[in-house]
Image: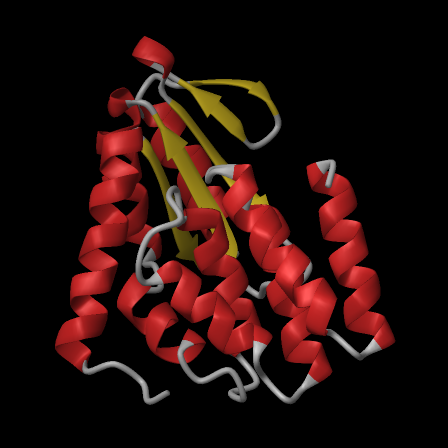
Length: 196
């Protein structure tokens, strides 16, 4: 499969952003230095910090910068409509990695950055609709066991916001065809986490 056109990638990124807006839960890949920007902007916007790195505001607004050892960026997670103005200021000041760029990298599973791009996108995906099954299947079909194992672990993240049965079916199909012991172990672990 070839990398989709720039216009197609931008459209897929737009659909991802729209889905996040519908859920009122936004996730952006940001430089790890964004933690201090988030703190300054959130506190200046009258958000409270009930625990280190977690900021809460009016009407259930919440912002937090997550770290994942498999990703070299931070993950800025915002929820609630009241978080949008603060989120916008943080992104403006700290910068972010565009979803279309992440998609472009993820569509080339043999790119050394592709597993991290796919994992980052897994935090953002809220429904198991096109183009996500296709993108994950692309990684699961890679001849490189490390790419397949990374995709399995990313599917485990994805299950939090999508129908668990859809993710479980993909994992079970991978389990039935997987020959690499390391990837098989990752599949068993992901299925165990799902209760499957």
